[in-house]
Amino acid sequence: MTSERFPTTTPEERETAIEAASMAIQRGDLVVLPTDTVYGVAADAFDPDAVADLLDAKGRGRDMPPPVLISTATTLDALARDVPAFARELVDAFWPGPLTLVCRQQTSLMWDLGDARGTVAVRMPDDDLTREILERTGPLAVSSANVTGLPAATDADQAEEMLGERVAVIVDAGESPVGEASTIVDATGSQGRILRHGALSLDQLNEVLEPLGATLTDA
Image (cartoon, rainbow, N blue to C red; front, side, top):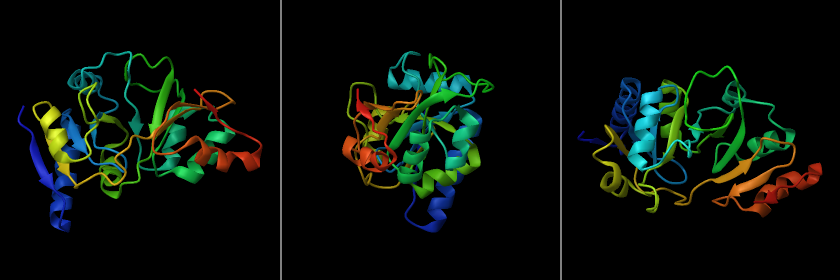
């Protein structure tokens, strides 16, 4: 596959890029997207073949299921169940933003993200362009745009170098503003813990929770 790259400098270019990415997702293809952290490679979360292609492109197995990006915080309850109170406080404070929550997934979901063991990792990115794409496509399985073991892409050039032959569309929005992956928090129980350190520190998260008598622990 030869990827097509779309700039987003003007309003017209932006709309063309959003439409091209949305159509590619609907066809079952992979797309490189900008986010507020690093660039991501995306697939329709409800298309098992597309998700399998995503894992294969990254060199990952089913034991490393991709997170899911959503366009609005209210979508969390459509994907996750038994979301604890501390997680909702973090959502209020840090979504949209570089916070990924691992929750118990809704049992009714008809998808296959890999060996997720009944969980789903969910994030709402602080990137208007990608949220516009998400509004048209619905939830997307998105992992950092890199081959596993290499640094995550922070611009379209890096993403194209690693994944250009595996994706249909690359949306080029310049350099990632943060350049660091999201912080992942386990929210499958009443006591939260950090699973991966990232753009949000433990102190930042606990600053929100401590007034409520809750704190996160370090993995």
